[in-house]
Image 1 (cartoon, rainbow, N blue to C red):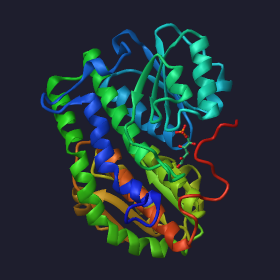
Image 2 (image 1 turned 90 degrees about the vertical axis):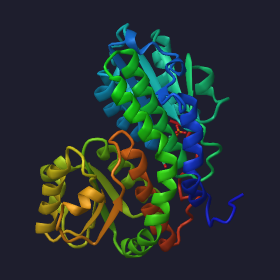
Image 3 (image 1 turned 180 degrees about the vertical axis):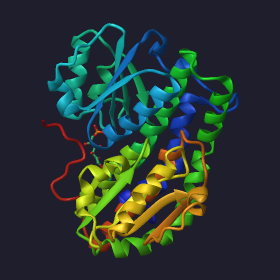
Image 4 (image 1 turned 45 degrees about the vertical axis):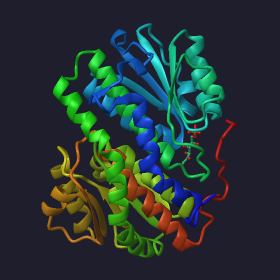
Amino acid sequence: DKGNHRHFMEKEIYEQAEVVSHTLSHYIDFAEGRVKADAAQIDFAALDRLAMSACGTAYYAGLIGKYWFERVARLPVEIDVASEFRYREMPLPGRMAALFISQSGETADTLASLRYCRDSGLTIGTVVNVRGSTMARESDAVFPTLAGPEIGVASTKAFTCQLSVLAALALIAGRTRGTLSAEEEARSVQALVEVPRLFNEILTAIQPQIETLSRELSRFKDVLYLGRGTNFPLALEGALKLKEISYIHAEGYAAGELKHGPIALIDETMPVIVIAPHDRYYEKTVSNMQEVAARGGQIILITDEKGAAATTLDTMATIVLPVVNEIVAPILFALPVQLIAYHTAVFMGTDVDQPRNLAKSVTVE
Ligand code: F6R
């Protein structure tokens, strides 16, 4: 049932406040303002490495999670797409656990990677949406995303729930490894607690502007997405979402890689979407935007209030979100990325919920 939404994808985008709040309550004690350390089921303090693997959107969630585990818990993370992880023949040392991420819990390559690690004797954790799935059954520790059934083929609410779980697990790992101060834990938890309310505020605030922008975007054949730090994987996700439902060719790049090749493509026919809140990388990303502008590229800037105030660059559109703690930024900045893909696809007239050639659950290799 789509309720009063035109597509399941739209309904699922608007459900995120509710399902993320539900998911977070599994990992966070809201009353105490602390993470629930016993929700971890993996002894992060005993590890000196974490291997992660997943496919598609779930892989991008894992890439963002890698930044969190490494910064907050000082735990090095190895991550690969599952279809390569399987073939990499990575040496699996003893003090390592493996974490898989999957909405369906049935993706063939992710499952094969899980079995490879399990056969090598690693402890297996899975962030999974379908509780009774094969991956959930074959894991030592199951970290549920409580997104409810996701019908739209393009993943939206499962992604933000995966991010919420990974952020909470990184905080738990930070606590148990002694790398996270009580103050930083309290600040981060408080930021996570505010996410559901901010979801609804942001959606209401940016929707009309994104609809107008998407009408313009639907005229282009190619789009480049750029980001730095945790916004780099989000740029990859933005490009994936745009290509899979609007069929516009899109590429995601780390902003710093621009000058190593893709800058050759920049002209007025390829808009560049830059995800750049006013974080520690902001100034560097602004200089990348100047390089784009100097070559006639049109910029769509997704930033926060501080970032918007700090630039005088001419843009095709500037989408402004509130200033938030850096651990929740990629969760909230997923919203404009999802809405841009959704509205552009609606203007293109594609089958948003059932894009051509795609299946919701990929059980072949
Ligand atoms: C993109 C998308 C896919 C899935 C991927 C993994 O919108 O939905 O890229 O993320 O096929 O699927 P799961 O999470 O079920 O393993």
